[in-house]
Length: 156
Image (cartoon, rainbow, N blue to C red; front, side, top):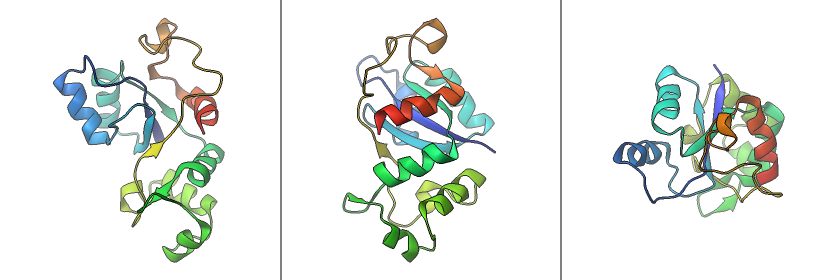
């Protein structure tokens, strides 16, 4: 089962109640907040039908996930996720935690003290298109598959 990286691109105005509820369930309260979810039919349906005009998402690679955990993961108290903390909760390295996440052995919210949301910055160099259109129409929202990894690296 693949791991999807979901990134909120659009803000609060003009959101329907369904969109607001779906964003709340994913804990994406602000622009440029992101999370990791398992690729299940129900999640895929929510992203495709309800949130396709608000978020962008795709499958995350292991190397990008490791970099994301090193640079943007936070624990309680807004402190960086450190190697010492990982060892304390039973993981030897960032790579070991990334492998466990990708295999579906553990979820972000199951790891004690780890915040399930990544706060990213706007991409360096900006977006290629507008965030008001779907990626198929020359915009930025919707499903982008493997191309999500390039966007993540620009936002770290």
